[in-house]
Length: 272
Image: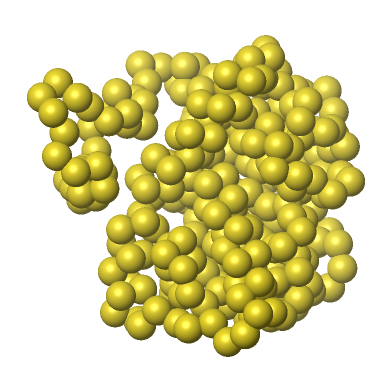
């Protein structure tokens, strides 16, 4: 297992509280070879799609999650165009370059996936993974053209850490629009694509998937609160403090662990 930076270790320790002697927390793995890391990333990606399928984040053929190849950094692994999230296995994934050429795999890539994710990965070398789908509450909330408010602890993970892309022009088919999406994302962990949906990034598939899951739920919570009345905001100082507690990269990775444990136990064929 890997050694965490002191700040990340401290964040996990604070969340867990005092641990008895001999008790440890799971940490992101380290690898002895690029082949081992590639296999792990592909298995994580397949699990991420199964999680999206379980949550009902599919809408026809729309939606994609990508992970950067650990060796050829200008290529990424992605779902085959038109394949159900709930059936994707590690062996089904395809690898494409930033020009859209399929380098590994036997099926085509969704052009929107290539256009958006190639530009996001190019603009954000730190973004190992990126996730996007047309989830119900994400696309409903995106039509408002407003940011998430700090009305819950979970929403604070995105406080002053998400952008809005407000230039919807239909299905994303051109690289220049992908570049504009990447610009709206900036250095944030997420971006709301107006009239479209959500996109999240992370230093691992688990992190990017978790940010998507909890952002979708935060959109749902804000929609419900707005329908019921006027939500009361958490003050900025507390929201920033809370973001530091629940919105770090390691927090995203760690909070995804229960989802990974559930999906790998129920869907062992994803490793095929």
